[in-house]
Image 1 (cartoon, rainbow, N blue to C red):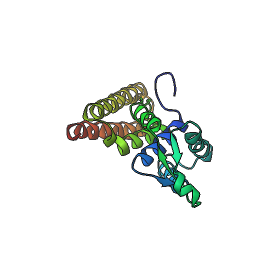
Image 2 (image 1 turned 30 degrees about the horizontal axis):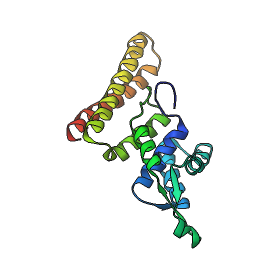
Image 3 (image 1 turned 45 degrees about the vertical axis):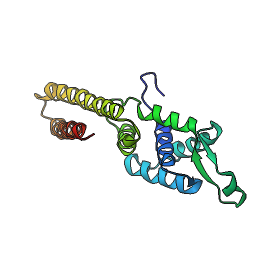
Amino acid sequence: MYRDKTLIPTEAIRLCALGLLAGGPRLYADLASEVRNFASRIMGPSLDVLGPSLELLTLEGLVKADAVAAERGNPKIRITKAGLAALHELLRSNVRAPVDDVNKLVIALKMRFLHMLDQAERQAEIEALIELSDQELGRLQDLRAQDCANQSYLADWLDHEITQAESRRAFLAAYRDRV
């Protein structure tokens, strides 16, 4: 985790794996496939991030193989109490501006597993995402204001980015009332 309590890419993968395992035990291969599919659809494929992150979960005691299934050669792994505590901490992490591929993955994972937090924590997470949107909007609008005199295509791109950030903020504000 960075000093500002935001997740590094491998921790985003950890969040995904632990969140999936909190829903029930899985075969290692199935877990790896689900994590890879989810993450690659948000930020593109990244074997450097995926492999080591899942292996460390066992070494750190966050997941454990089912002993009975292991004897049959088909072990499922399950989340441990330490894994649940780590999941909770990861879900409550900060998200950095600007919203890039890794941060989009973290936001998607937070939304995917938001139901695992209590209501006050869910509200706090949505508020933090609204604040992130506000920061991003301010940054983009400031750059747009500085580029107004310039006849480049950057202004059109910034207008597009501002529209997306405004839409994300409006979605989160409406979502906050439903959580």
